[in-house]
Image 1: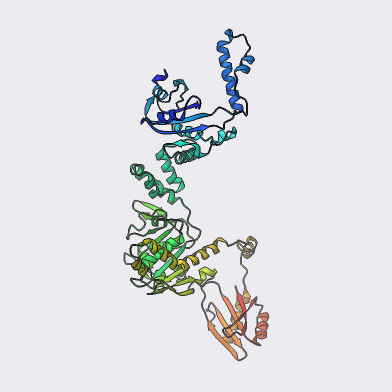
Image 2 (image 1 turned 120 degrees about the vertical axis):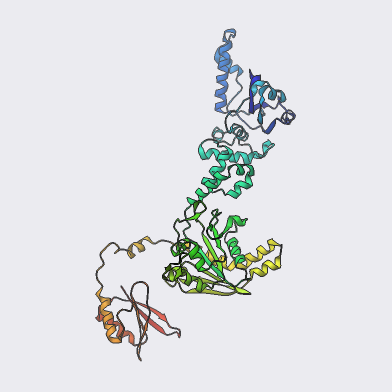
Length: 558
């Protein structure tokens, strides 16, 4: 009945003495066999399992013919058994065959000069690749038996068997059983972050047939991603023709040199109304030619602008056509001709909504703190401005650390290099290296921050408790108001005292009240006695003024 069996996958083993390499090559030359792989096993030894199998086989043989034999079962086994644990097996071939269309077992046997009953017929999804896996003995089960692991180089095949076997093994790990190529692709997109572009490059036909599902799964994958712990926002400004878009893309490439294709690095925001259509999880989003009012209107108000540009973001979905998407980018780069002061003040200032309603201005610090990097471009050079409050973890968000006059003009690089894109990329990377270095310095600072749990617990020890009234500060303010005539409604009073008299300066804080007293010379003793007599708690710091004179700073705060 074996001649009636028709299969797609076949497997056989044959001793080298019975089947030569020439016979195998002649057999696999038939066009009906679309995939084949074979190996010569010349280092196999008998295992305990092999011995047990041979004994079981010999017992079956003995039962069939024991009436005609004049020996016992034990004697029969001892006479015919060849397997001994640890002994070297005869050299033998293992051959795996696959046909796109079913072929009869008898035909395959004739092609390789074998008895039909020596063929095996692997069945089920992945059966052929299971046979290929056996060629090297790499499977965990084979290794557990102590079998020799044959190098990949000893396997001969007419296809990239290693690549296909790796995919098969990965598929098996994913679900505990082999998956179809389509399901493998879907799994990789939904759970492992495979991009649509990678799917298309790997299997154009498969991508074409399954494009709607793959898009859905890719969007679901992005939606489930956690936002970055820190998001860095850049604002690049300069007049037309200085290369704002070019330097935006150059910065993005320099921050993620591990990616070779721009499509994997940055996403350039589209037209109004469809801003995020096509966003595919890129780490950088570039906003070309966006003034403050453009962002406010495009993102439907200041609240969402501040969400999108939050330096410590939470998961926020943004609308795309017929769906929504989670922005998981670690970098935003905005560029326009609007000066950075006008841009930052505009984000927090009064503005008109699309329907003509007026939205009142808010605290400017909200916009300043969201843009740690400002890059003003000039004709021949550019500046790097780093937000001091962001860098030093203070409230000085309207102050910037300046690195000025860094040579470079992206437009000139593009014009001079012409079609030599590789040279242009090298020069762009060289030009923006100071920016990338500062970026990585900032990120390293955040990544290396250590948390002193004891110090934090001590700092917040009184949280959750009713706050006792602090009459000391109020007493001092009343005394100071009597001496200086300062209005008690001021949030902060700075008093400079020296041996010539009393001078005043006011500054309004946005947070808690702090009273600072700077003392020069012999006024130090006067202030200490005054504070002590009014039971005012204070701390003392020393610093030098612009002329190098030593000053003591008394800090009194709620």
